[in-house]
Amino acid sequence: MLVLIVDDSKVIRLLVAECVAELDHDVVYMESGAEAVEYIKTHSPDLIMMDVEMPGINGFEATKQIREIKGEDWFPIIFLSTKIDDESYQKGILAGGDAYLEKPIKPLRLQLQIKAMERIYMMRQKLKSAQEDLLLANEKYRRLSLFDELTGLANRRNFDRTLEKEFKLAKREKKPLSVIISDIDFFKIYNDTYGHQAGDECLSAVAKALSNGVSRPADLACRYGGEEFTFILPSTDLKGARELAERIRGSVSELQIDHAGSKVSPHVSLSLGVSTYNGQFSSGEEITKQADAALYQAKESGRNKVVAI
Image 1: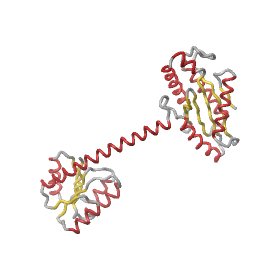
Image 2: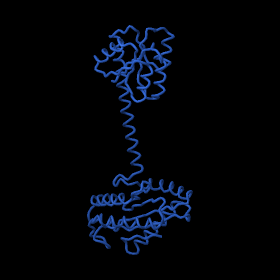
Image 3: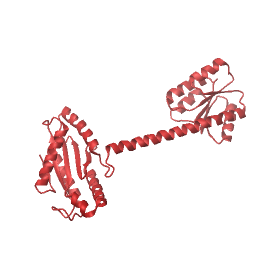
């Protein structure tokens, strides 16, 4: 544990520090309540041994300020005092203290009190560990709920949520909003030819190329489902979206992933449909439907191409 000793008496500080050191704990010294309060703003000890009668800010006031600064980050505070009457004891507990030790200090009682606080320290560490595990679990669940596990791209749920938000923003600010929908050409044949493991590897490689294709933080690349991928491009007109779609198509072609079953290329290729909102749609879903219609045209007219409407 890290033990903070706060006392204006050097003799008391050294005595308490010696008792703490014998229990293999680390020690920090402060000579006043004001110093302790400043220290607490940037540090978190595991135990404070706090003198009550100090010039300036006394132990009770310092403890109140420390509890206000740390909020729910709780650690025990033991008061050291020559006054152990009921009124002083009540003031200390109400100020945020947890225990009292009478001066002059008896080393054995001091060490036993610290040992009792060690149990609290261990429970506090377990609680912190459980909280960290919970945060990690929540983050993992959040990622699973918003990102595709295989490719790492945003998933369909993320796409729908983001598109709704971006559509409202584009409508309010009267800015364009583009959507690209793409499909790996003849992917079912690819899976049948090379197997599902190779299919997953192909999806991951394509997804990486798509992710690298967008550079703006606001742009979102998604795995829409199966071999279908989508993009949300805020503040992007039809010309800009089409240019990006062509770059993405080229990036996938450059992967040179063999596709013996493809009817349009010896390698894995993409067909892409592009649509842009310029005030004519009433929802983000309508942009997606038009981009899907453009994708259909790309497939019907030969695949491995971009169609923007």
